[in-house]
Length: 571
Image (tube, rainbow, N blue to C red; front, side, top):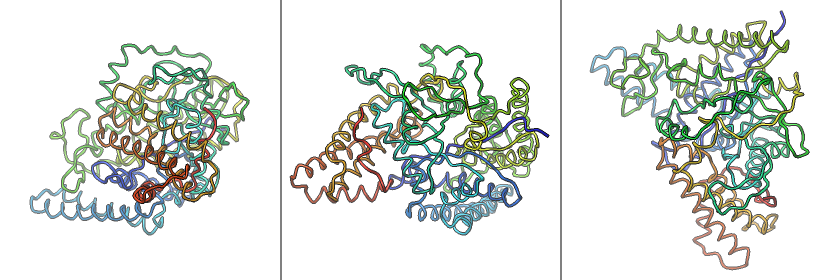
């Protein structure tokens, strides 16, 4: 039976650099939760499918900053402590629920003890405390494809200078090669934010000159990346649905303000989200392809209100039992107050996962059948999601993923693939231009650039000028002390550029933390800039400054092979 189409999940795994910058409620706890609830369970399901004879092909992005955190000894030690705390919390809850005669919650507390015990065994025994290494092994066997991202998830479309985009990409590629043992082929643009080449003026500086900017694709080609991803509206036109507003109340409020002046682009005829295109560039570059997010399958998972995660039988994300923070209640109803939530019953869940996975798989097949009938071409559906939706936000989502992968491979008319594998089989021939935009609500930059975040971009622009000055002056220095200063300066600049800070400010989900992190890395850049100039000009650097540098090198010790020369030249 002939294959009518191909499918790949494209999962974007990302967290900002939080090691050594707080634990709870904001900090390392985010990383511990994601590792326990998403990354390790996904690995467990993928390896389980392989053991059953399946090839669970998927395309997974693991951002450089996340990869760098997960190889750190400090993460490994703190994560094991976190898992033991959860096991202790489950045992404590058992004692409480036994006294109170809450029989179902008692069973759930035992479930959590076993669940976290299994995660501990996966981490320590099966994957030898090396989560990136476990993903790498699957890639080395040709089962999955790992893509990269901007080094610290800097928002490419708003970074004030071309050299900063280039440095984000170059740092990402070098980190990937060191951790995953090969060059990456694909990249997830942070927030799927794309900007073509055009005369550009910094939107936060009314006195800024108009400068000629290269398109994002130029820097991908320069660093040998072959493809990226865009949201549906960039390829197809129409109203941009966005992926975050349903999850964050503040974004709904901000969206109402934005809609007053927003005019969606009309639908563009003759284009499809079911095949990749080559991006048109005014520069003579190597071909760079892009895939488009498939929106009809996307809403089935992204929407907490209308999608599968809102099923009343699934575990509720928000209601937790303290002090341990374990969850014992089900969604019940998407709009119910926490006090009205009913208890969670695991026995009710498998049939719901089966029904949702069946619906999803049938939706995929129907869309590919329709496209094949019209075009005669076996298209591809790229189902793009934040990886942490599965397991962390939607506890049952990891099992859903495994069901879908298994059932698609069982269907002879469908083929699981990765984006790189599909490009090899069906090289794109059509070249098109894309407008500027992102996968945020409205398709623009307003989540990341608004009245609450403008000051962060002013800080970034100021620091980029300083980093470039140091790079142009001292790149290639043979003085070890100056090289140390310059390398840490580059790290702090990358951390300042993380798009997470603007996102957390706009959603109010961790606003104080994000603002403090921007202020911290800004201060670090300024101090290291002055230190580089002082040492480079032959003046005395106080001992306290060297101790300060040593502390930063210990706290923000990512990107071991970073080079300030990557910021040299350009605009």
